[in-house]
Image (cartoon, rainbow, N blue to C red):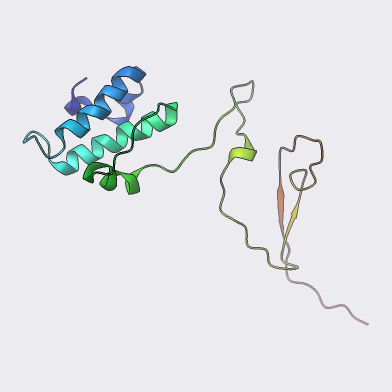
Length: 136
């Protein structure tokens, strides 16, 4: 595949070995070709790395300008999907931002926090309304 034919969609059809070769080609051409600007190569490099990461294809991270420019543009890691009848997301591997607990306003419940020798599959966050003042 030629670099000018690359898109995130077209990369899904490329074998792992060719994906690795395209990654190497980006490093070879970065700043050394008039056919592509540096920004063009960075964009293509990011698409390739995102596909490699998605497939679990290893690659060498070099401390060079191309890798430094690409790093902040990479997609965040996605949770693994279990291949099964329901293709459920494995919640234990899902990286979620921390929850800020506000006493008597946000509460957590569900099997996730009470799991002992169980396989939890959910967590419930309860948002409470304003507390009513007790009379008496």
